[in-house]
Length: 429
Image (cartoon, rainbow, N blue to C red; front, top):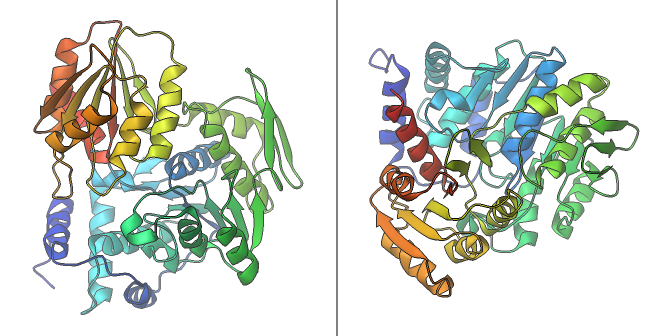
């Protein structure tokens, strides 16, 4: 054991090397076995959040409100943009390298000869770190699906499914009904299960009934009303009036805020939260890469929209922004996504495409993207399509061509947004 890495970068490199060989292995038996050996258990309420889109935003709102209310909050959120530490937040601060190295050492010691994927190993490590950090509440974001996700070896006190749309079809199935069933896998008997998708698949409703979960549905058990200035939440037994809109921009954020407030209503005995803390928490919440409008000109928007559902929300948000003569899109995508659907959803506002190949074997190449853009967008006279080897180069090209009243929207895979974030960071130093 003495030859284990002693730094976080070395640990991550080891895990990546080890798991280049490991296939995504469906099933939770291995993770459960290591969890038992770690004696991993939470002594505080756990909120688990799954969904195709909106889960990161919902987690961030819960964290922001609960921190404002004076609770010690642990958060596991994915993926990271620049530093792995972004995945583990202890009381609003990123976990330190030392905390993560200790957590990795603990999993390695408990693992024995059980193989774990990169994701399973790091999930157990971060959950172990949060379980031992003396938190009042822990918020866990689910990765793929729900039922077979490594996070699901923990029983949540409140489980939230934000939206159900088609993504990751290789693993989860290609209908909303199939995906809804996978997401509902985080529900537990006798515990509150919240779904903020306004049109929940029947499979999700049936699964909640079959296991005896207490299902709260948008529009039936909780809802919202409002005008341009403010909005109100109405739950089963709690109303919250004259709330400010969340600082995360976009029309869909109100559904995510409702899910967060429903979870707080469900936990109101264990974790009471006052009206002012809810208001302040919603107004101050921050989440990188979710319709994030950067200061300066031209306007730059970062958004990790990588499926048609998220892309049409991004397109709607762009339409609400006011006039910009030209819109430049920096776009890169993984091959397994519905790329045609994403491009179609965005084509209304994009004049100039700067397409990037991503640093991943699963990336679609920039030329593949260009061929798809050409099919969708043959009608725009002034449209241009350029291809680049990486997101930084695509972004540099957009910056060099955009006028100060234009806008640049960087979207697609997390790797697209992370590549541009890293390039911007290094150009400021």
